[in-house]
Amino acid sequence: MTTACDEKYIELKPISSCRREVEVAMVEMLVSLQKRGWSAAELALALADASEDLVMMIATKRLRPN
Image 1 (cartoon, rainbow, N blue to C red):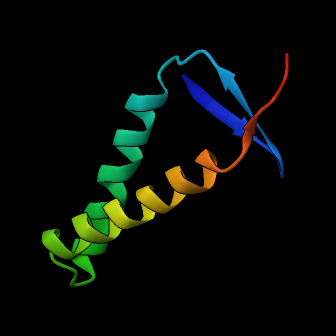
Image 2 (tube, rainbow, N blue to C red):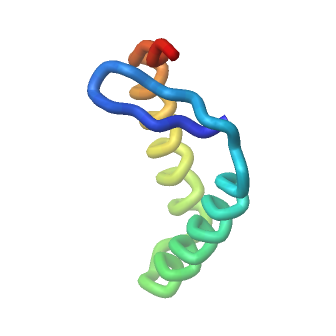
Image 3 (tube, helix red, strand yellow):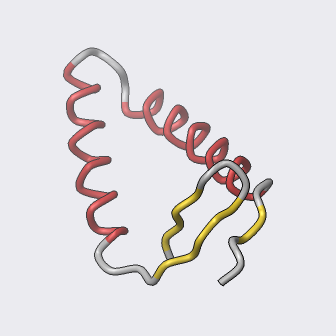
């Protein structure tokens, strides 16, 4: 499932190729950042922290009624 959200609600939508597109974009971003001098370990930690922050933000919102 993927989500779309506004200020108070999260709407769940069927997943298509979301995961694949996120992984492609993520790898492109990480390669670019490594070229700017960041290590894979630093990037992995930063990405994990940012992902956790997003998950926590989403978790504090209510599901949008259908």
